[in-house]
Figure 1 (tube, rainbow, N blue to C red):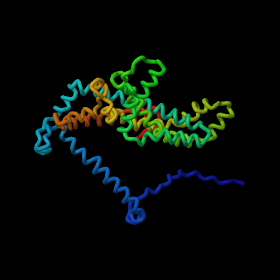
Figure 2: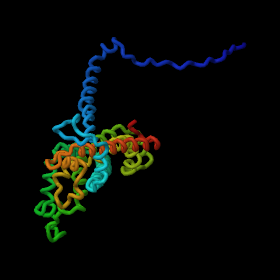
Figure 3: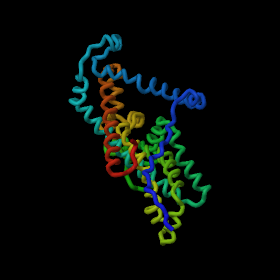
Figure 4: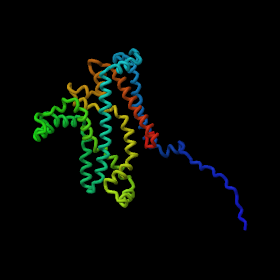
Length: 322
């Protein structure tokens, strides 16, 4: 018996109908369209329209003359910035404090989330988690007051050091420039570690439990599970958050540095935000153009950090933003 065979025809790719915005589709999802439109309009009004104000960075802006009446000076304000030793100093301070905050906040939050995940008693675990993220809801004014009272010559830190005979006299923490950056970093860690760990704890719950069971069968202990199962499972989340936060390196802060700073530590405490405040809003200067130029520099550098880091992550094959 002969079986006839026919040449197989090439299968055409199946066309997937793309959703089209029709009147019928609009009527069906008009609520979503309206909600989306509200957010788009909000973004345009509060994020894009204010960028028109960047024009004054290229003017010798006078508030009594306005944008239309102020004199154009081109890049004169930017040239002043990069020849100003004070601005170069505040760039160094801002970048160093921002980098320290990024590195330590990421590492400590990951470590805290992994260790907290290993706690078996759920009531104790929930209590620790709640206590840890409560400082996030405190304003920086309150945090600065707590830090200042703890580190003064009569504060609890010096009291403990004196009682333990570690020091003979009270140590001036807030008057020593070399201690300012560690104090800022530790203050940020105390305030934000619990809050930053929430998303890592959520990511841990999405890791396949079968991986832990397989690791147990292979004889892995709890530490080995954390190192070879939990940490690799967190890698995509770590990369996305790292890429998002790397753009905030120059957002090292304002309130903490401004309120804790004093004349003895101003060479290490001043940030770009404080520099902008001094030039743009101080009654002695009122140079809005220079303050705007400093803000543009900060924005451009932050965007460059995000684009470059995202490009590197793409080349490495890691998770990326775009």
